[in-house]
Amino acid sequence: MKAVIQRVTDASVSVDNIVKGSIKSGLLVYLGVAHNDSEKDACWLAEKTVNLRIFNDTEGKMNLSLREIIAAGEPAGILSISQFTLLADARKGRRPSWNGAALPQTAKKLYEYFNNKIKEQEIICESGEFQAHMKVTYTNDGPVTILLDSKEI
Image 1 (tube, rainbow, N blue to C red):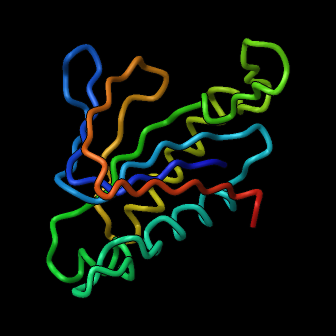
Image 2: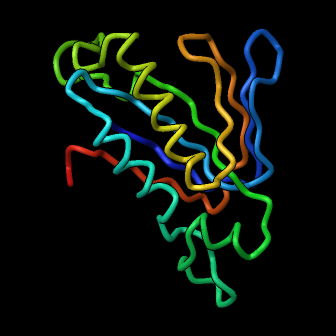
């Protein structure tokens, strides 16, 4: 399972000009599910995401997690977007291959499982619409962008 995590001051996702999810601040997570991913990968990634220390403390040092800034009273959360293109293999030719991506029914199940694992940690988790053409708008704060891969642990 792969994730692109961005620290944001705002983020929203819409389908057909209808907002499906939005957060005021927190993390925008693009999530790609590989054919060999499992619930174990989703659990690891959800825990890692919530506890990743990429928010500034009072001294301006990236030392706080999403969990910690929420505990301090900031109205933050996660906007989770399914994105199979994270599994693109563009090493050969000019057209990417998505053979490494999970089949849609498996990917949807693990994407929803990831989102539920975030919610179980009492974190707001908004989301887009699986397999829809989505438009995502956000303001990257920093910019801070982190890449995570559950297979590289």
